[in-house]
Image 1 (cartoon, rainbow, N blue to C red):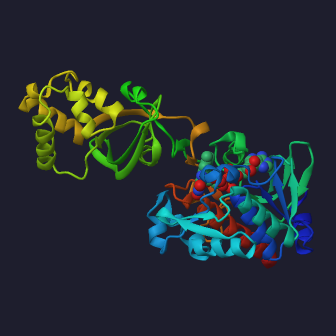
Image 2 (cartoon, helix red, strand yellow):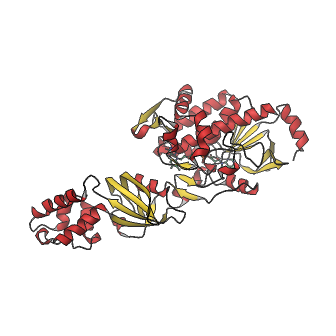
Length: 427
Ligand SMILES: Cc1cc2nc3c(=O)[nH]c(=O)nc-3n(C[C@H](O)[C@H](O)[C@H](O)COP(=O)(O)OP(=O)(O)OC[C@H]3O[C@@H](n4cnc5c(N)ncnc54)[C@H](O)[C@@H]3O)c2cc1C
């Protein structure tokens, strides 16, 4: 391609741009901050538009960040490699993202759980605002530009080759190609492949924030039913891996909804776990027994499943006795102490066996990616190839729902862009 000497000469003349690969959340920020840092920037996106994944975030409303108050609070929501993000986050906190959007004409609002959304409730307004920012600073946005490989010379990134055969020289290359979830949005794992080719360690790629398959078939019978205010506890090898209060949804494959989705982020790589559902977490065992006794003793010959409707949604009440080994048609005045105890057990520790996750195609984020030990956390530059940077979901960092994943992309993108512009100046 180009000799190292030529590259150095051209770089000194600022002839070569910083190339940002991927026009998603991280890529738009990397391009914006590199250009604001004084670099000439070209943003390469293989889709016909920027931010295709941003467009579907937050059910089309884009939970753009989480307005949490401290860095520690943010880091406690990061599932993999939180400390690696320390530098990126201290330089670009959620309030910085909200200010940036405001400056670019996109007002935001804060909802339950400090989740921030554009006031318009349109994810497209976030991308529009960032696109406006990119145009303001003169970023050369190339759509339909698919990168095939990254060119290196003497352990330095010197450019890229596009799938149409064209080659583009670069003073720095920032890889923002995302993970592998929802590949229809363009995140097909290209950056992971290039990283492997360049001898960067890449950890196992798994779906996270995704629905869970159960061994039991009964959840399918309750498909579409949401349980609110329950406690879900997940165990692996006898140890608690997750325990939270919230909502869960039954589906044709098992379970989904906020609790199941968050549990998926904590599963071992086998994707297997034992779950206990506490359907009455507000009552202790004694209070629950008293409540059951009261309901059953006043019900006479009414069927057990009918009376359970006082404690559970109707469809669940019909199925529930069978899950405790009981007949729902049993008249309440024939329910024994042992049967009542079995009901109480199941109401507070209903077992489910998780046998795996739904596929990457349905996952909100990718777990795994370019291992952070190969990346400098202060700059996002590769420790193996100089002038090569990574940002966003392509790295082995992922978090809970609530705006944290997008914020990781914004913050690491901003840092990579800033660093690439700075290092070019220093040459
Ligand atoms: C359904 C859904 C809802 C979500 N909702 C939220 C939410 O509300 N809040 C939140 O915080 N997170 C949410 N997320 C997660 C969040 O969207 C991602 O973590 C974030 O978009 C990652 O940004 P990224 O820039 O790293 O990657 P991406 O957004 O995936 O962008 C990568 C870009 O690179 C491009 N690209 C890939 N390969 C090439 C190539 N070879 N050449 C050129 N371009 C290439 C792709 O086309 C793509 O545009 C959601 C995810 C999904 C799937």
